[in-house]
Image 1 (cartoon, rainbow, N blue to C red):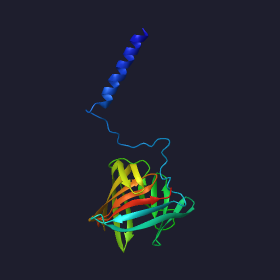
Image 2 (image 1 turned 135 degrees about the vertical axis):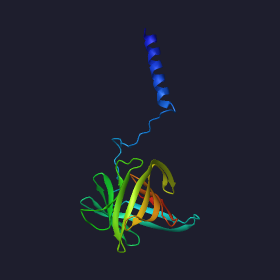
Image 3 (image 1 turned 90 degrees about the horizontal axis):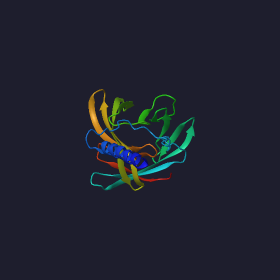
Image 4 (image 1 turned 180 degrees about the horizontal axis):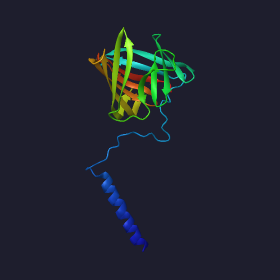
Length: 201
């Protein structure tokens, strides 16, 4: 009797395996739901530092820069670059936001906690007296990116289309971000690729 039960159980398990592994009608999950251990934006911590290297289209070294979180006030993290520029990062409820000055309102959305392919949002800002709109789309949530700082899995690839004064197209840029690291890699419209070279966390 036990042998019969065992055979029936194995038959059920095998049938489920074949159904789940079938190449036909494979259900691809659209949303990426974090596990209980997935706490995004853990890089928001005073003292964290990133170093990036830049390369041109011929893969020739084109410089580097560093950025470091130097202080925190009520959840707003002040980031300083080695050229003296600064901005503020914070965990804005369901997303990571960046702004150029300390304020409890506004901010440009960099990344959502729960990203999914084809997710879209826009950021609006002024520069040089002109109004700009960045139209952002999630291209992938499972990119593997190798850098001098290591190989990072589950990177999120974003495509950013920039428009000026409404619908006048300006350029396209690509970014690869990680929820626990920040920026891993980017490629701007001038053909300059920025890659994470080193971090201290």
